Every structure is written in structure tokens, then in C-alpha cells.
Length: 99
Image: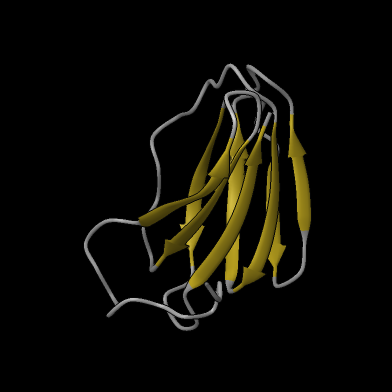
């Protein structure tokens, strides 16, 4: 698989592909084309790599982080957050490592 091989876009929902996992670690490729998310409060830590596109994440403490191609972010477990903006051209291609 090549992470830059994309399905027909745009789609109404994000596209999520689980690339690997073993019960302790899960790796996902997520493709966003303008979607935003509800609030997350995850059991796992999440290490995010934005491979393409631009996005903004919002945290419940009011902090906002703007991400661009190549940026990474570590989100601790139970850190409430949401994706408040994603680019559609180019689409956002995320690699997310949950552990």
C-alpha cells in the first residue's frame, strides 16, 4: 500500500484504514476532505503525523494547534480534543498511531 494512493474524493465522511495493530498499538491512515470531528476523549495516547494538507485541532482548554504537511503531535490519553478544520485541496492525509 502507498499512503498517497487515494480513493475517489471528496466523500461525505472521512476515510479510515487500519494499517496494522496488535491489541497494544494501532496504526491508521485517515483521509479528510473538509470534515471536522466531535470531541474525542480517548483511552490511548495518539501520535499524529499530518502527511499532506492543513488542519487545526482544538483542545478543551482553549488551545488551538494549526498543523501543516509534515507536522507531528502527541496527544496524551484523555486529552479532550477535536479536529476543527481540515483542508480539502489538498486533502489531509493523517497517519495516527494509537498506543
